[in-house]
Amino acid sequence: MTQNVALVTGGTGFTGRYLLRRLCELGFEVRCIKRKNSKTDDLADLEIKWYEGNVYDAELLEEAMESVTQVYHVAAAYRATNLPDQELVDVHLTSTKILAELALKQPNFERFVHCSTVGVLGHIENPPADESTPYNPGDIYQETKADAEKWLVEFSNNSGLPYTVVRPAAIYGPGDRRLLKLFKMARLPLIPLFGFTKGLYHLIHVEDLVEFMWYSTTTKETLSQIYICGNPEPSSIKSMLKIIANNNGRHAHFIRIPSSPIFMIAKVIEKLSKFFNVEPFLYPRRVAFFTKDRAFDTSKLASVKGFEYKYTEEKGIRALDEWYKEQKWL
Image (tube, rainbow, N blue to C red):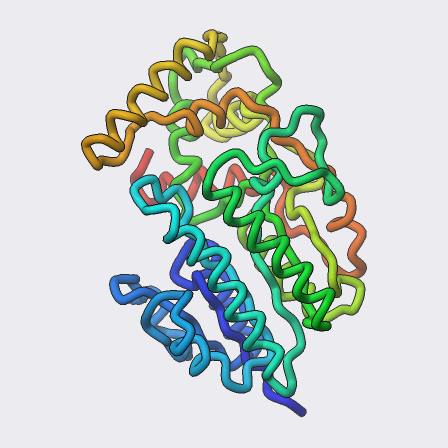
């Protein structure tokens, strides 16, 4: 029987760390590309062969890909406001091209799992969106992720490379701080809600995402398919805040604030931050978090035989609230 050898990119990121642990639990021989300054102390208990360098370094990837049976391409330059556009092109598109071409050369290669993003669909005018919704990227991050996904699908259809594309919705769970602001807001006596939309936000717990990424390699049903990975139903910002407040024995009270002035302020702050080469404390995408409806039809994912969600929205949010409190961040 062929030993399963998995190469993971982006393994030191939030999702990647969970993926590395899961693959090690499953008995894979695990390899991972990491940057020189990436911290791996919390992964020291795992048997991982590390390859240090850029994810688009062709020579490094050729060495790391030898005899690999599965690739989990998770690397992303996420929210990297100060990176040149070419770096995003290289991290997302160039790396995908090199890895895919190398995968074809491996004699026992089984599956290329490409981690994209629902961001390739941009703003959803009429939610929910599904896998047939046209590409509509709205910034350089989304554009380069879309380019990588489109290239991989075309390349694989022409070459026969076995692949599965996963498009995660909002990934959350212990270890991530992106939703921390929401949990802090839930503790306010009067919680502001920006704009007058429903504020739909589609979540996927990191453990559910990682489980599907691995599980997708075990069935032909997912071969050459794209999956939007999110909970069965979207959440609303308001409903999430209510769950958090309830978890702390409180009743949430809300006030609506027009979003237009906040967007204008955020745009000015973002421009000034770029000029002074500092991270903005407020930017349009953060405001959009509260105002745009991001809802998806995830029935394709739910229909995959044998895959089951571990976390409901309420179970996941309550667990994350407790974890934040354990870290003394709240």
